Image (cartoon, rainbow, N blue to C red):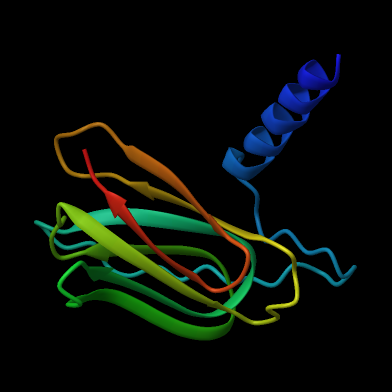
Length: 135
């Protein structure tokens, strides 16, 4: 019985994390329009990133440390942009505006031209600094 309850709870959390949400606020304030869009040029790889809380800085790098994309703002929640290239492995770094929450999530969707979309959910108890080995 307890195992079924835990599995049900895990399924609900996973669904919550992977569901599209627009500027979710838990402090009762009105949503802040935090989306940023960069021009997608030919050869670029578009992506979107949905964060579980407001971030002040987001960086996407390759494993060698080369910066592929970055954005600084006080209210980053949903970000859209493009990468000049798609590395085999990418690193996502997120610095949260208020790091007091017990756990943070980031859902990244990459739409490489001519391929199926790639989706990954990052999670961490504090600042995100995680890698994703792309298929």
